[in-house]
Length: 375
Ligand code: PCP
Image (tube, rainbow, N blue to C red; front, side, top):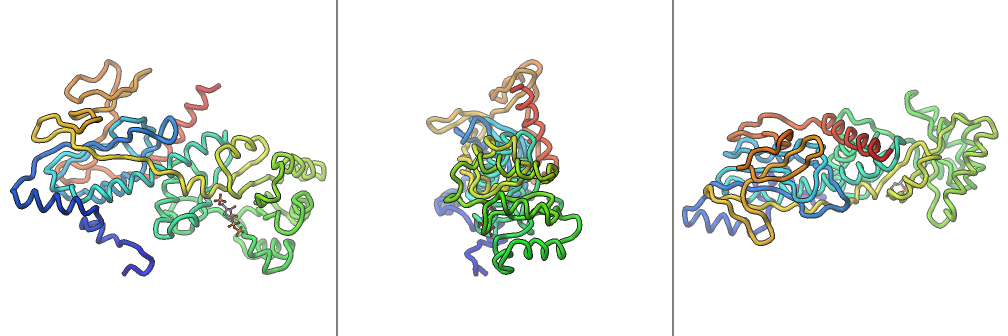
Protein backbone atom coordinates (compact mmCIF):
# COMPACT_ATOMS: atom_id res chain seq x y z
CA UNK A 1 0.00 0.00 0.00
CA UNK A 2 1.49 3.34 -0.98
CA UNK A 3 -1.65 5.47 -0.90
CA UNK A 4 0.19 8.42 0.65
CA UNK A 5 3.54 7.88 -1.02
CA UNK A 6 4.87 5.97 1.96
CA UNK A 7 7.48 3.23 1.82
CA UNK A 8 6.32 0.59 4.31
CA UNK A 9 8.36 -0.90 7.17
CA UNK A 10 8.79 -4.23 5.40
CA UNK A 11 10.36 -2.68 2.30
CA UNK A 12 12.86 -0.79 4.46
CA UNK A 13 13.62 -3.87 6.59
CA UNK A 14 14.36 -6.03 3.58
CA UNK A 15 16.70 -3.40 2.11
CA UNK A 16 14.50 -2.61 -0.86
CA UNK A 17 14.45 1.12 -0.09
CA UNK A 18 17.98 1.74 -1.29
CA UNK A 19 20.02 3.63 -3.86
CA UNK A 20 20.32 1.49 -6.95
CA UNK A 21 24.10 1.60 -6.95
CA UNK A 22 24.02 -0.63 -3.87
CA UNK A 23 21.99 -3.20 -5.84
CA UNK A 24 24.67 -3.06 -8.54
CA UNK A 25 27.37 -3.44 -5.86
CA UNK A 26 25.65 -6.52 -4.42
CA UNK A 27 25.35 -8.01 -7.91
CA UNK A 28 29.05 -7.49 -8.69
CA UNK A 29 30.36 -8.78 -5.34
CA UNK A 30 28.02 -11.76 -5.34
CA UNK A 31 28.94 -12.77 -8.88
CA UNK A 32 32.66 -12.63 -8.03
CA UNK A 33 32.26 -14.34 -4.67
CA UNK A 34 33.60 -11.35 -2.73
CA UNK A 35 32.31 -10.30 0.65
CA UNK A 36 35.16 -8.75 2.63
CA UNK A 37 34.94 -8.22 6.36
CA UNK A 38 35.02 -4.46 6.80
CA UNK A 39 34.70 -1.76 9.39
CA UNK A 40 32.59 1.22 8.37
CA UNK A 41 32.16 4.45 10.27
CA UNK A 42 29.47 7.11 10.12
CA UNK A 43 30.66 10.69 10.52
CA UNK A 44 29.58 14.24 9.72
CA UNK A 45 32.33 16.50 8.39
CA UNK A 46 30.38 19.65 9.13
CA UNK A 47 27.36 20.66 11.20
CA UNK A 48 24.79 23.48 11.13
CA UNK A 49 26.35 24.86 14.36
CA UNK A 50 29.31 24.00 16.55
CA UNK A 51 27.76 20.77 17.82
CA UNK A 52 25.04 18.29 16.94
CA UNK A 53 22.74 15.93 18.84
CA UNK A 54 22.92 12.33 17.68
CA UNK A 55 19.46 10.85 17.18
CA UNK A 56 17.83 8.03 15.19
CA UNK A 57 20.02 5.23 16.53
CA UNK A 58 16.88 3.40 17.69
CA UNK A 59 15.91 2.84 14.06
CA UNK A 60 19.43 1.88 13.03
CA UNK A 61 19.69 -0.89 15.62
CA UNK A 62 16.19 -2.11 14.73
CA UNK A 63 17.29 -2.31 11.10
CA UNK A 64 20.61 -4.09 11.70
CA UNK A 65 19.86 -6.40 14.67
CA UNK A 66 19.82 -10.06 13.70
CA UNK A 67 22.36 -9.63 10.92
CA UNK A 68 25.92 -10.92 11.14
CA UNK A 69 27.26 -7.56 12.31
CA UNK A 70 28.61 -5.81 15.37
CA UNK A 71 27.59 -2.21 15.91
CA UNK A 72 28.95 0.37 18.35
CA UNK A 73 27.72 3.94 18.58
CA UNK A 74 27.56 7.09 20.61
CA UNK A 75 24.42 6.73 22.73
CA UNK A 76 21.36 8.56 21.45
CA UNK A 77 21.19 12.10 22.74
CA UNK A 78 24.98 12.44 22.72
CA UNK A 79 26.32 15.81 21.72
CA UNK A 80 28.90 15.23 18.99
CA UNK A 81 31.32 17.28 16.92
CA UNK A 82 32.44 17.20 13.25
CA UNK A 83 34.67 14.26 12.35
CA UNK A 84 33.63 12.08 15.28
CA UNK A 85 32.44 8.59 14.33
CA UNK A 86 28.92 8.25 15.71
CA UNK A 87 28.44 4.66 14.52
CA UNK A 88 30.91 1.84 13.84
CA UNK A 89 29.74 -1.23 11.91
CA UNK A 90 31.89 -4.37 11.62
CA UNK A 91 31.14 -7.46 9.57
CA UNK A 92 30.89 -8.82 6.03
CA UNK A 93 30.10 -5.88 3.73
CA UNK A 94 27.16 -7.59 2.05
CA UNK A 95 25.42 -7.78 5.43
CA UNK A 96 24.77 -4.03 5.41
CA UNK A 97 25.57 -2.67 1.93
CA UNK A 98 21.94 -2.20 0.84
CA UNK A 99 20.91 -0.68 4.18
CA UNK A 100 23.17 2.38 3.93
CA UNK A 101 20.46 4.55 2.36
CA UNK A 102 17.87 3.88 5.07
CA UNK A 103 20.43 3.95 7.87
CA UNK A 104 21.73 7.39 6.88
CA UNK A 105 18.20 8.66 6.28
CA UNK A 106 17.19 7.68 9.80
CA UNK A 107 20.01 9.52 11.51
CA UNK A 108 20.46 12.48 9.11
CA UNK A 109 16.84 13.52 9.60
CA UNK A 110 16.34 12.71 13.29
CA UNK A 111 19.69 14.24 14.28
CA UNK A 112 18.89 17.42 12.33
CA UNK A 113 15.62 17.82 14.24
CA UNK A 114 17.12 16.92 17.63
CA UNK A 115 19.99 19.35 17.03
CA UNK A 116 17.64 22.22 16.16
CA UNK A 117 15.44 21.47 19.17
CA UNK A 118 18.47 21.39 21.47
CA UNK A 119 19.87 24.64 20.10
CA UNK A 120 16.50 26.33 20.55
CA UNK A 121 16.06 24.86 24.03
CA UNK A 122 19.52 26.11 24.96
CA UNK A 123 18.59 29.57 23.64
CA UNK A 124 15.33 29.58 25.64
CA UNK A 125 17.16 29.95 28.95
CA UNK A 126 14.75 27.77 30.93
CA UNK A 127 11.57 28.82 29.12
CA UNK A 128 9.34 26.12 27.64
CA UNK A 129 9.69 24.99 24.04
CA UNK A 130 6.73 23.20 22.43
CA UNK A 131 7.18 21.33 19.15
CA UNK A 132 4.37 22.55 16.85
CA UNK A 133 5.85 21.60 13.49
CA UNK A 134 4.73 18.08 12.57
CA UNK A 135 2.38 19.76 10.04
CA UNK A 136 5.44 20.98 8.17
CA UNK A 137 6.46 17.44 7.17
CA UNK A 138 4.84 14.29 5.79
CA UNK A 139 2.48 12.85 8.43
CA UNK A 140 4.09 9.42 8.07
CA UNK A 141 7.12 10.71 9.98
CA UNK A 142 5.27 12.70 12.66
CA UNK A 143 6.22 10.20 15.37
CA UNK A 144 9.91 10.43 14.44
CA UNK A 145 9.76 14.24 14.43
CA UNK A 146 8.17 14.46 17.86
CA UNK A 147 10.54 11.85 19.32
CA UNK A 148 13.58 13.73 17.98
CA UNK A 149 12.21 17.08 19.21
CA UNK A 150 11.61 15.55 22.66
CA UNK A 151 15.13 14.09 22.78
CA UNK A 152 16.47 17.50 21.73
CA UNK A 153 14.82 19.02 24.80
CA UNK A 154 11.35 20.18 23.73
CA UNK A 155 9.10 20.26 26.79
CA UNK A 156 6.03 18.98 24.95
CA UNK A 157 4.86 18.25 21.41
CA UNK A 158 1.60 18.85 19.60
CA UNK A 159 1.09 15.72 17.50
CA UNK A 160 -1.18 13.07 18.99
CA UNK A 161 0.89 10.33 17.29
CA UNK A 162 3.96 11.16 19.39
CA UNK A 163 5.47 8.15 21.16
CA UNK A 164 3.71 7.28 24.42
CA UNK A 165 5.19 9.12 27.37
CA UNK A 166 5.88 12.42 25.62
CA UNK A 167 3.59 15.19 26.92
CA UNK A 168 1.19 16.34 24.19
CA UNK A 169 0.23 20.01 24.45
CA UNK A 170 -1.99 22.41 22.56
CA UNK A 171 -5.24 24.25 23.01
CA UNK A 172 -7.20 25.84 20.14
CA UNK A 173 -6.58 26.89 16.52
CA UNK A 174 -7.95 30.02 14.85
CA UNK A 175 -10.47 27.69 13.18
CA UNK A 176 -12.38 27.27 16.46
CA UNK A 177 -12.73 31.02 16.84
CA UNK A 178 -13.98 31.29 13.24
CA UNK A 179 -16.54 28.57 13.93
CA UNK A 180 -18.00 30.50 16.86
CA UNK A 181 -17.55 33.90 15.24
CA UNK A 182 -15.90 35.43 18.31
CA UNK A 183 -13.11 34.43 20.68
CA UNK A 184 -15.16 34.56 23.90
CA UNK A 185 -17.56 31.83 22.82
CA UNK A 186 -14.72 29.72 21.45
CA UNK A 187 -12.68 30.04 24.66
CA UNK A 188 -15.74 29.15 26.69
CA UNK A 189 -16.50 26.10 24.51
CA UNK A 190 -12.89 24.96 24.87
CA UNK A 191 -13.04 25.50 28.61
CA UNK A 192 -16.23 23.46 28.92
CA UNK A 193 -14.91 20.52 26.88
CA UNK A 194 -11.16 20.25 27.55
CA UNK A 195 -10.05 17.97 30.41
CA UNK A 196 -9.42 19.88 33.65
CA UNK A 197 -5.67 19.28 33.56
CA UNK A 198 -5.30 21.07 30.19
CA UNK A 199 -3.97 24.57 30.81
CA UNK A 200 -6.45 27.25 29.78
CA UNK A 201 -4.28 28.89 27.12
CA UNK A 202 -6.47 31.21 25.04
CA UNK A 203 -5.48 32.28 21.54
CA UNK A 204 -5.54 36.08 21.39
CA UNK A 205 -4.83 37.51 17.97
CA UNK A 206 -7.72 36.55 15.74
CA UNK A 207 -9.88 39.61 15.16
CA UNK A 208 -8.71 42.37 17.49
CA UNK A 209 -5.66 43.98 18.89
CA UNK A 210 -3.67 41.66 21.17
CA UNK A 211 -3.88 44.05 24.12
CA UNK A 212 -7.69 43.99 24.01
CA UNK A 213 -8.03 40.26 23.44
CA UNK A 214 -5.62 39.27 26.22
CA UNK A 215 -7.59 41.26 28.78
CA UNK A 216 -10.80 39.61 27.61
CA UNK A 217 -9.08 36.23 27.82
CA UNK A 218 -7.74 36.91 31.30
CA UNK A 219 -11.20 37.98 32.48
CA UNK A 220 -12.60 34.78 30.95
CA UNK A 221 -10.22 32.69 33.07
CA UNK A 222 -7.15 32.15 30.86
CA UNK A 223 -4.06 30.81 32.63
CA UNK A 224 -2.00 31.94 29.65
CA UNK A 225 -2.55 33.85 26.44
CA UNK A 226 -1.12 32.67 23.11
CA UNK A 227 -0.08 35.29 20.59
CA UNK A 228 0.29 33.95 17.06
CA UNK A 229 0.32 37.44 15.53
CA UNK A 230 0.62 37.29 11.74
CA UNK A 231 3.88 38.51 10.22
CA UNK A 232 2.04 41.35 8.43
CA UNK A 233 0.84 42.76 11.77
CA UNK A 234 3.97 42.31 13.83
CA UNK A 235 5.76 45.58 13.34
CA UNK A 236 7.64 45.64 16.61
CA UNK A 237 6.83 42.33 18.33
CA UNK A 238 8.87 43.27 21.35
CA UNK A 239 6.68 46.35 21.87
CA UNK A 240 3.51 44.27 21.45
CA UNK A 241 4.72 41.77 24.05
CA UNK A 242 5.69 44.50 26.50
CA UNK A 243 2.34 46.19 26.07
CA UNK A 244 0.49 42.91 26.62
CA UNK A 245 2.51 42.17 29.76
CA UNK A 246 1.93 45.68 31.07
CA UNK A 247 -1.82 45.58 30.56
CA UNK A 248 -2.14 42.14 32.14
CA UNK A 249 -0.13 43.28 35.16
CA UNK A 250 -1.87 46.59 35.61
CA UNK A 251 -5.27 44.91 35.51
CA UNK A 252 -4.31 42.38 38.16
CA UNK A 253 -3.44 39.42 35.94
CA UNK A 254 0.25 39.08 36.79
CA UNK A 255 -0.07 35.29 36.96
CA UNK A 256 -1.35 35.03 33.36
CA UNK A 257 1.55 33.84 31.22
CA UNK A 258 2.39 34.79 27.66
CA UNK A 259 2.88 32.07 25.03
CA UNK A 260 4.20 32.97 21.60
CA UNK A 261 4.03 31.05 18.31
CA UNK A 262 4.05 31.52 14.55
CA UNK A 263 7.18 31.33 12.37
CA UNK A 264 9.52 31.62 15.35
CA UNK A 265 13.28 31.31 14.88
CA UNK A 266 16.02 30.70 17.40
CA UNK A 267 16.72 34.45 17.37
CA UNK A 268 13.09 35.20 18.29
CA UNK A 269 13.35 32.78 21.22
CA UNK A 270 16.51 34.49 22.40
CA UNK A 271 15.00 37.95 21.92
CA UNK A 272 11.76 37.33 23.84
CA UNK A 273 12.70 34.77 26.47
CA UNK A 274 12.63 37.38 29.23
CA UNK A 275 8.96 38.15 28.64
CA UNK A 276 7.51 34.96 27.10
CA UNK A 277 6.98 31.83 29.22
CA UNK A 278 6.56 29.32 26.39
CA UNK A 279 7.30 29.21 22.67
CA UNK A 280 5.43 27.10 20.10
CA UNK A 281 8.06 26.35 17.46
CA UNK A 282 7.12 24.66 14.20
CA UNK A 283 9.27 24.84 11.11
CA UNK A 284 12.43 25.89 12.94
CA UNK A 285 12.47 22.42 14.51
CA UNK A 286 10.57 20.17 12.10
CA UNK A 287 12.20 21.61 8.95
CA UNK A 288 15.68 21.71 10.44
CA UNK A 289 18.49 21.07 7.98
CA UNK A 290 19.51 17.41 8.00
CA UNK A 291 22.92 16.47 9.33
CA UNK A 292 25.09 15.35 6.39
CA UNK A 293 26.32 12.05 7.79
CA UNK A 294 28.27 9.77 5.49
CA UNK A 295 29.20 6.12 5.86
CA UNK A 296 32.73 5.09 4.85
CA UNK A 297 34.67 1.86 4.93
CA UNK A 298 37.81 2.53 6.99
CA UNK A 299 39.17 -1.00 7.25
CA UNK A 300 38.89 -3.83 4.71
CA UNK A 301 40.16 -7.33 5.45
CA UNK A 302 42.02 -5.96 8.49
CA UNK A 303 43.84 -3.29 6.44
CA UNK A 304 43.21 0.44 7.09
CA UNK A 305 41.71 2.06 3.98
CA UNK A 306 39.98 5.31 3.09
CA UNK A 307 38.96 7.41 0.15
CA UNK A 308 40.63 10.75 -0.41
CA UNK A 309 39.68 13.32 2.21
CA UNK A 310 38.97 10.72 4.90
CA UNK A 311 41.19 9.18 7.56
CA UNK A 312 41.79 5.44 7.34
CA UNK A 313 41.56 2.94 10.16
CA UNK A 314 39.14 2.30 12.98
CA UNK A 315 38.73 5.30 15.27
CA UNK A 316 37.46 5.98 18.73
CA UNK A 317 36.08 9.09 20.40
CA UNK A 318 37.56 9.82 23.81
CA UNK A 319 36.45 12.26 26.46
CA UNK A 320 37.72 13.19 29.90
CA UNK A 321 38.32 16.34 31.93
CA UNK A 322 39.35 18.92 29.32
CA UNK A 323 39.77 16.20 26.67
CA UNK A 324 37.65 15.46 23.61
CA UNK A 325 39.56 13.74 20.83
CA UNK A 326 39.27 11.25 17.96
CA UNK A 327 42.17 8.79 17.87
CA UNK A 328 43.08 5.60 16.01
CA UNK A 329 41.50 2.75 17.99
CA UNK A 330 44.82 0.84 17.85
CA UNK A 331 46.42 3.49 20.09
CA UNK A 332 45.82 3.58 23.85
CA UNK A 333 43.21 5.97 25.23
CA UNK A 334 44.55 9.36 26.31
CA UNK A 335 45.20 9.44 30.04
CA UNK A 336 42.07 10.19 32.05
CA UNK A 337 39.78 9.77 29.03
CA UNK A 338 37.26 7.06 28.20
CA UNK A 339 35.79 5.84 24.94
CA UNK A 340 32.32 7.20 24.20
CA UNK A 341 31.35 4.46 21.74
CA UNK A 342 29.12 1.79 23.27
CA UNK A 343 28.29 -1.68 21.95
CA UNK A 344 24.71 -2.02 20.68
CA UNK A 345 24.86 -5.18 18.56
CA UNK A 346 27.36 -8.02 19.03
CA UNK A 347 27.44 -10.59 16.21
CA UNK A 348 23.80 -9.88 15.43
CA UNK A 349 22.59 -9.90 19.03
CA UNK A 350 20.95 -6.71 20.24
CA UNK A 351 22.61 -5.80 23.54
CA UNK A 352 20.62 -2.73 24.47
CA UNK A 353 17.93 -0.45 23.11
CA UNK A 354 17.64 3.33 23.03
CA UNK A 355 15.46 4.92 25.71
CA UNK A 356 14.21 8.33 24.53
CA UNK A 357 14.02 9.70 28.06
CA UNK A 358 17.58 8.72 28.87
CA UNK A 359 18.65 10.29 25.57
CA UNK A 360 16.78 13.48 26.41
CA UNK A 361 18.36 13.65 29.87
CA UNK A 362 21.77 13.49 28.19
CA UNK A 363 20.92 16.48 26.01
CA UNK A 364 19.50 18.52 28.88
CA UNK A 365 22.59 17.83 31.00
CA UNK A 366 24.86 19.13 28.24
CA UNK A 367 22.66 22.20 27.68
CA UNK A 368 22.84 22.91 31.44
CA UNK A 369 26.63 22.56 31.39
CA UNK A 370 26.87 24.94 28.40
CA UNK A 371 24.78 27.59 30.15
CA UNK A 372 26.74 27.10 33.40
CA UNK A 373 30.02 27.68 31.55
CA UNK A 374 28.57 30.87 29.95
CA UNK A 375 27.93 32.36 33.42
C1 PCP B 1 0.13 26.92 13.47
C2 PCP B 1 0.16 27.26 14.91
C3 PCP B 1 1.61 27.64 15.21
C4 PCP B 1 2.35 27.36 13.99
C5 PCP B 1 1.53 26.43 13.23
C6 PCP B 1 3.75 26.81 14.30
O1 PCP B 1 -0.11 28.03 12.68
O2 PCP B 1 -0.74 28.27 15.17
O3 PCP B 1 1.77 28.96 15.52
O4 PCP B 1 4.46 26.58 13.11
P1 PCP B 1 5.57 27.57 12.51
O5 PCP B 1 6.54 27.86 13.61
O6 PCP B 1 6.19 26.77 11.40
O7 PCP B 1 4.86 28.81 12.04
P2 PCP B 1 -1.34 28.18 11.71
O8 PCP B 1 -1.15 27.36 10.50
O9 PCP B 1 -1.51 29.63 11.54
O10 PCP B 1 -2.53 27.53 12.53
P3 PCP B 1 -3.88 28.06 13.07
O11 PCP B 1 -4.29 29.28 12.35
O12 PCP B 1 -4.80 26.92 12.84
O13 PCP B 1 -3.68 28.30 14.52
